[in-house]
Image 1 (cartoon, rainbow, N blue to C red):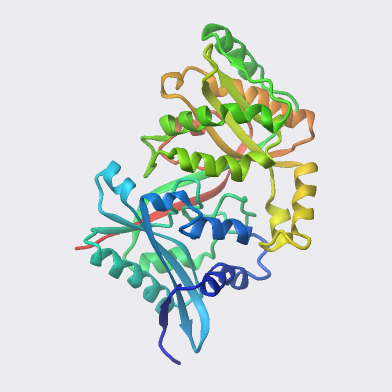
Image 2: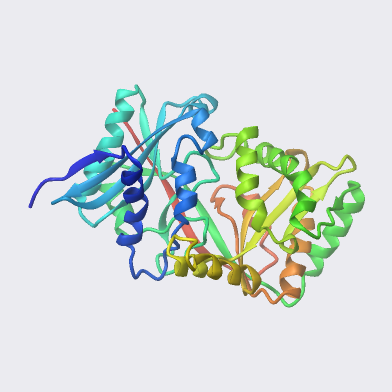
Length: 375
């Protein structure tokens, strides 16, 4: 058997191979949700992703006998290292066959570049920002993933641990059973908070109604997430990028912005009808028929993904989350939604987990960030 050959992605053709490898590796898998290739390209191409204003990145493919057997990305986020006073390299987009020689060669390539750059550790899976897919699945291998999460085979974490990587932190997601009616406690807290702090819920009928508040929402996200693991505040260019990418498919029934008397967003919940099964049918492509599956899922569904929730720091522990969950849960009930999947929360972020104490829940997924410090 020939040894592994690592080749850096240098061309558009190489990038297409890099993106499509995971689809081939997981062909027939009923749990993985493939990303749209067009969106993957917009993330990985320097000219399209504003994160490259402060990031460097390289991508590699692993070959054996001229056949692709693995892939990996390395990302040097200068802004993150500056904010967190670290000298870390990130790895992401990591996939490989169940062969330690392959995973070892890929990881070593990232480590070599990190050492060349004078860094002290490698951690991941991480993307350019927290808006990218992150975390290696360690629990929930028999659960269908959401459109915003990584799925991987059970042997992935086994390989990383053999290669000297240790747990740095975990994120968890919950599956929430939508109740027949919103708990009275949640309604009561919501009403009280709105009156006590002179807040109101944005009355949005169409996506264009929330666009004027998008920047304020992302500012609240930046403020509320700034102390969470590895978070780097989004820039104006990045905010514009994500507004264009996501806000066009938002259904305002499943979004809630809580505003103060100055019309600033102090809390928000952005949720979206699940695209998991639609993306599986689309197989990473919008055309010729992928968009039809997605439109159907956005029109009729019984499952919803809670993509983003956030509260301004000065309103944390004041019940603002009850306001947007009261509104959102009622919308789910009114529209026949049976199940909601929470956004991922750090296992140490008790406040983000406890907001679901009034509902029937179970742990859906657990994903891990691994780290290896150089001696």
